Figure 1: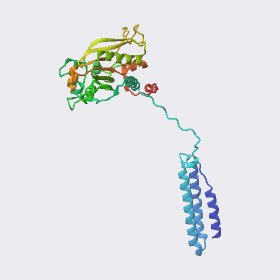
Figure 2 (figure 1 turned 135 degrees about the horizontal axis):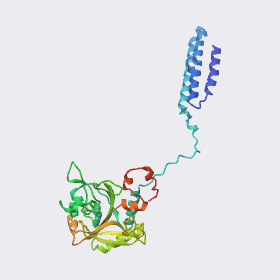
Figure 3 (figure 1 turned 180 degrees about the horizontal axis):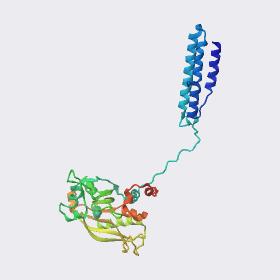
Figure 4 (figure 1 turned 90 degrees about the horizontal axis):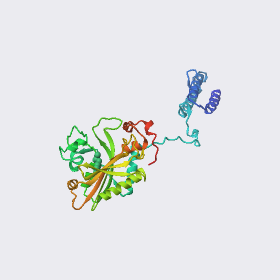
Length: 343
Ligand code: DAH
């Protein structure tokens, strides 16, 4: 009995000192102490040599020892994960952390932010509106009644479940939504995604982005429109860029114009981008049509205003030298990660 006690004490010391660096060593422990040919088995075998009067005590002793070995085994198992020791005190706090990859902004967002921030400096606030729009806000209120031929200019996606709903064809719907709120004056810049049923190609897509501008107050004139847009062009394309307005037609503005800037690729001498004209069209604009004001319960005798709308993809393509509009929506990270500007 005494001998057994001594044996157990010695084994306990040995077992307490056992460490395992990986799962393999834990398994070695199991085989050595708990396996079918292991220590536990052989020491249990000693029972038959114990005198009858000591059997009860010895049985208790061996049971305790078994629990001790099993606990040690569980402890070793828990402390090794994937072959690595992972106890709290094995973490090296002096190691540098993992570098998280820095993301990049989408080129459309970069261009949108640039455009929006220029107008914000002039006091324009940012507004957004719905992409699924009713006929009234996308067309009717903008002086495009049903069967108006100008509706054909915009290849509209209709919503099957409700023929009164469309995917907005332009951001001009937000003008209407802002004017309807009845809070004047309005000085707003309205970025967003728009949809047109066009064949997808390198040059055109069935969805793209626009920025709409609207300024309504007493005594707003075409001169205000021109000065605002001159400021924008200078900030956006530089001081040397020339600007020209061409008379145009939009149902929601009167008079209407389109604005060109001298080609910032060739400087006006003529290239593929400007189709040898030396000019690039960048936006449509005009004085808000009195019918549009009336449709939004604004008195055209008291208030006037100007509006403009421009695409985002085209200036982004010119700025970043992108030759296929489809790249914007393919989410290829090899393309996207090239845009690291912080704006
Ligand atoms: N909505 C027009 C389009 O999508 C762009 C536009 C032209 C907006 C003139 C305006 C504007 O606000 O005054 O082509």
